[in-house]
Image (cartoon, rainbow, N blue to C red; front, top):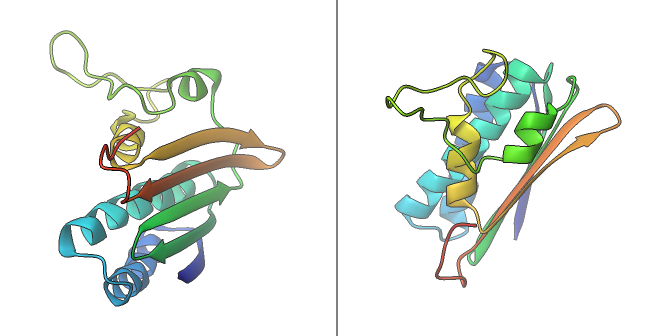
Length: 145
């Protein structure tokens, strides 16, 4: 089992952390597809923390049987609409055009992607920001939540 942590404030911080996570995933025996899926989750949750949460802390745990990603930020927290949806919708309107998830701040497709790639996914507000947790258990053949 390997655990990595990072504080992220910018997209560059997130990209640098993704390089470390990639090395760790490969060292843990994850194949290219599973490594790519993990990196997508780390990138999305890290970018959300950096752009919408005034920066945050990421923790990634990787084993040969799965992974866990936790993001805690210092922002205003999730709106009730985002908490209620929790990535279940990718915000495609009837005409196929993405609809903003939260008053025009974002389109919300990233959290839907994280949900699809995870066997467990939760969002919650914390006293000082928002928390997102995603995990993937490779022994569960279903894959997504």
